[in-house]
Image (cartoon, rainbow, N blue to C red; front, top):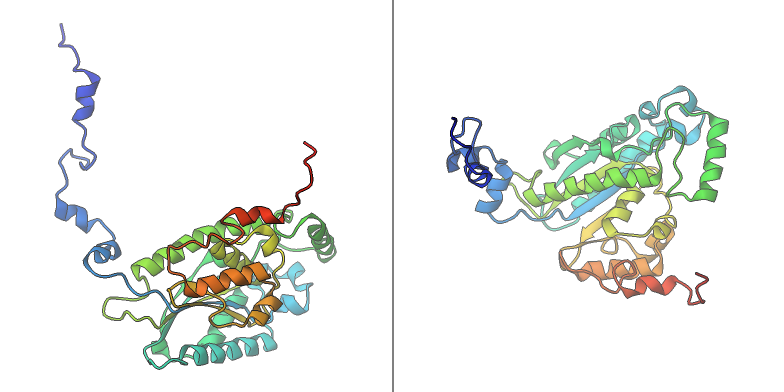
Length: 320
């Protein structure tokens, strides 16, 4: 008669979570070799400084901006810039260069994340004309920064009807047939935001020995995508998002570190400029708080974080 099997509890105790496929425990040195080098560096050295700015740039004027019929014959990702759009990009590059070099230190650099669409890639090339090669720390093509998907080739008359319907339904939740809603864009931007935060934390674009607080990050993307990025970063509500306007073609919005190290739009921009973009008084109050707050702190008076969220609801008797 075969010997009885050992109790299940004893068999489970024999399993080791750190064993390789041969059942031999991995040595500590082998484990370290399999880890990301950035994570090892985080344990051995102080964290890299946060970039001074995160700049959001909308592409220059495109063929689709001046002729909606272009979308009926050219795939959206292949829509390029007009002659004016190329000038928009070069002007944006000169403005960014002046902004980045405005401080007393001369060690500034810039790292780009760019949508893979033709008009954003051409905008990036135009911006780069104003930058010396050693100023560019790197470029990453990021598909999650692409334009909202409107459904492949677009029928011009049908698209006009769809956009009118979107106004009645709500700009954030309306999904174009075979395309995306702004809520769908929000989901993929959430993933990109986590990637960006991780890149900042591990110093992805600041190699050891070249770390500087004068690093700048630039996102070259599209109007709605950039508005959704701001919504996600600052935790704005749907109602607040729907009050925002597009940046001009070739326009830029600057998130800059304040006294405590958090990013605020009010460090570089005036309140009037942000009102024109669509920020309300309550959003501006939060941006003022961001100017002096430290990373990890929470603004408990902002409407999305505390009791004041309910202030906008009426106090009439419920019918339920």
